Length: 436
Ligand SMILES: [Zn+2]
Image (tube, rainbow, N blue to C red):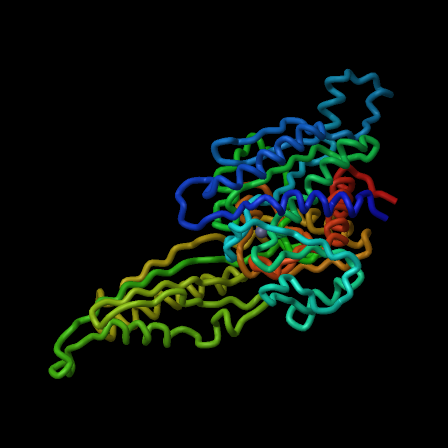
């Protein structure tokens, strides 16, 4: 049973997806693009219209915040508690939960021609023609998740843009939950806040958030793929820059003298475990990823990223690159290889584990809507990870959006409805209740 209307969810999603909000890498300002403001303004207005409290739009940095005050009935009447004390008590009966989604979309496909979402009702499970003129199609053979969408309502692109289901599916569900609670005071919940961020896709989603306007005990980012996925483990991450100084001589007269920087760079890579690269790894397996290498005999520059869910294995990876640099300096002379290793972010699991109710409540809510909860390790980072290390433990929930960052992106409306229902049930649980 659902407290939401599929049609309304689809319309809301299309309204948001039709606004182009691609962010842009390498822009020093937040927001990186002005177009994101159009969605921020719309959300701000809609939140005000639906009667949310503390609705605010940070015009400078393009964040939108709002609150639904808690409504947990307390037994204060019996003891003659004063109304102001009772209000405080109501607020404190449940933790304050924050819901987070990002407004920007990936710019992996140039979408300046606009986003034109198309609804396919009762999908027949076959090949979908996204754009007949350009011969752009997609099928379950290429994208196996599509097979599960048979009989459901999905929303696709016209093949010329991203859809932006990442993360407008999350924005849609949070807005639906806000609208629902504001029009159904009979369903109990603690105080809920939302935060819509810019520039997540360029790594700056929570860089400029205001902890005063988003004062919460716990959070959920609503930014995953399959509904029912609950993610709270991400990589520990470091980056590694290497500069190699060669010794260039005439090649005809180089014996015992020349140090070829590019060859030393190749030698460096050969000292790392050959099968610990993104190509060979999955699940909880970490990797060394050579992102960049360029050079001449004279000088060579390399950039790696190091990733591992396990803290010890992560530390070992850092030691391994340092040891490789040390070995080459022994072979070719001190100062040949300069290496700099910098931590980027850590696995949020250590911040979530003391608060496993976040995962347990989510799992129960997923089961209540008839799905099987899955907890998968994230092979990357999330904004929830950053928030977790800033004192707001914040796992990630699936949204029903698939094929992120491409023209084959689609969302499943049935799953978005289940996603909203899961949020509703999580929040109701934190108030000490269960629906049904
Ligand atoms: Zn996202």
